[in-house]
Image 1 (cartoon, helix red, strand yellow):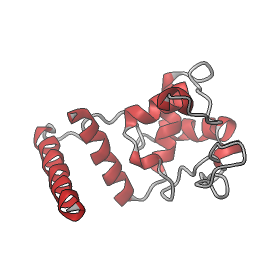
Image 2 (cartoon, helix red, strand yellow):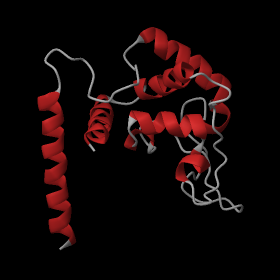
Image 3 (cartoon, helix red, strand yellow):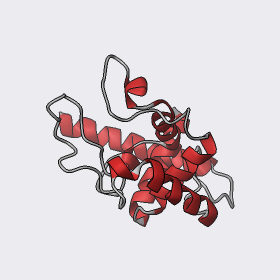
Length: 158
């Protein structure tokens, strides 16, 4: 039964993706809901510098994250995840990534969840946060970017 439900859910995702593409204006270069500017070299370069200054200490200079990032530390918190294609950053739509970076993981998740990921909304402007996330996305392989664009488009249709 789970397999049938998963297949039906997969068909629903394809239908929603098809609807997003059908509604996507001809000649548009970005997926619906896309905020990140990963194809803009100036934004990506700015984001790389900001990432190095504010993010690399935890998430790694090469976006590799901390060792054993999926295993809780003695304090119950998770280590910083990678932001490369091996991590889960690309599983979240643009708007959610911006929210997580702006407010911090604990504020977004709520319910007493604890995280070492602080919010950067008082440190970086929204444009700087978008630049950092654009830099991160620019490092993903094309197939991951396509999937991320679909996730972002689907989040807008909800």
